[in-house]
Figure 1 (cartoon, rainbow, N blue to C red):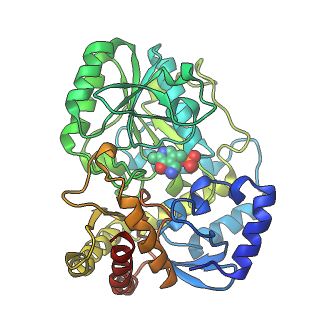
Figure 2: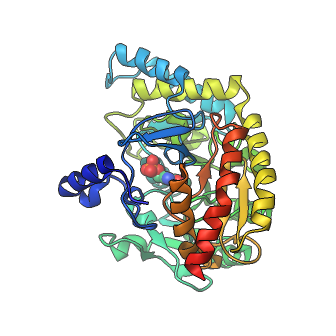
Length: 434
Ligand code: PMP
């Protein structure tokens, strides 16, 4: 399907003045082809494009909108806060309240510092880990995304342990050389790395529910091994909960797995749709940060009062309405409704789900637990499926590797709509890849 004339015209203008026409690459539809939809408004589970076409949305702005688009209580909080001033550059009560709410909800969290994006949160947590341990190496896992700071834009090659290779131009090899990349789902690889370089490792960084390269659900044993090995070797365990934080449980993946990291990073939901990130951990570690300690970190708009208000309103509704229970029920319902459709599918397809996160694994056999196990043919199956659903008024993420997000605004009727639209989309995918 082609985008409507307004989206086409805006994209044309955008490409003249914005590289690729977008301010974040995946929005450009490169992975699926076609013109991105320019959105003019959204409410609940629905977005409306610049041509007035409406779509049932399973992207949710890539995670922040756990309550759905334009939630009335969040909007009211934003309006109220903005009426008192958009930024002060001085401390405000909202920062304290958000930090208190996070500390109360997340295991082991004693202090948090707010920043303006997930990227900044992880970048700052890594600097803190290095400063606190006096070590340089960081370990990440292939397929986990932690924002676009230089030392984390590093992916794995094949092999048990790969020395970091930059996955972006402009990342000096010398930076990447301080990053070790391991495959997910492989405790032996972690053991081996620690045996070799354990005393040089500042931090092991992981998305405990990896959701940026498909949904690569990890076994408890892998996370438990990370907890044990980091402790034994004096390294810090950092959970990147930018997606999972306040989504899979009030205490994120840490609560779900019953494993407490040394540091955790957040974004998305805690900003309620405004630009916010945060990182935190034990007070003794956080004391290494300026102005108390020697690890520098700062931000003009950090703890922005309007953003704090949006985040606080979101957390308040989540807690008050026990939204996590409702999302889990919706997730179960999604599985139930899709089971017969997927069972009859003319292409290989499995629904992978953790709470309100879901992903279609488009390959035969068990869904993958590591990036290396993803069949490259899956992307070709996804493209026609994506476009068929979009034609039917349902928006999934424009990439085979991105997950879907359920929100409190979704209803069982919405899930039924997806189930009803899927057979045609699956048939299209089968035809296109025959
Ligand atoms: N960490 C994770 C796990 C993420 O999913 C993301 C973004 N999707 C980031 C970090 C970076 O966050 P931001 O895009 O806000 O910089």
